[in-house]
Length: 316
Image (tube, rainbow, N blue to C red):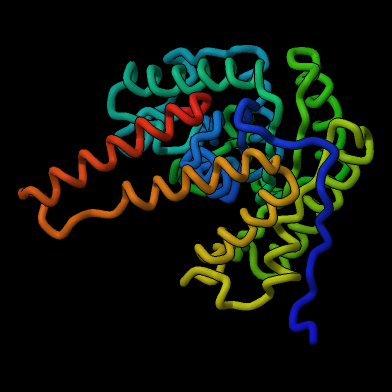
């Protein structure tokens, strides 16, 4: 008896190995999966701008990395006691201009270097809606709680997204000809747009992703994160309390599907060893001031050294 409709997912014509750097960019779902990769000590950069939801802001961010852009004080604006950039999430903002610039520019510099050598680029579209700041005509990756009256909100078309990404991907390949690009659509529901608005937005993203991939099926690929949650899991018990984000169980299940399709068998074997170590390290004795804790620290140190000795390629 079949109690679920499985999303068919075959092996991709390439495999992600531990020696392959990767860049993850897009919605907070990209961060969810990318951070699992980081915890397993893959060499990856995850959301160097913070979460970016619409395709234009993601594209703008990638172009900043391609062109190795560094921000100046003129690129920041004050709001809510912080100095912000429309390209970055509020977590990069600080009360001091120089501190904001330092954090943002360091992220730009390191991500640009990783992109140059990455084997894989994972992009997750979250929403087809954009917010354009009326005064300076910038499409905001983050609105930083500015009044909605300062923005014009509209929905992108499939054509706009496809044209933008066909040009962008050609530009990416000029700096890194080995790059494989994997697109996905975030399963996170944007109910601020209403159920119908969210459905329209996701439909545009799905259609755009399909057209983009069809233009170069040897370098561009699709991972069905959206379909796995909505069509395979398809139950509110796989959502978090807000009924919009996937639960931890759903996230881990989608990562398992991702691993089986995109990660090499050898890498999965190493992943299992790293996962065992992480569980041991995260365990904490009841009392942190006695012999038991001292023995625990020695044991973890020994496990760490053994892990690095057996797998010296692990990212620290």
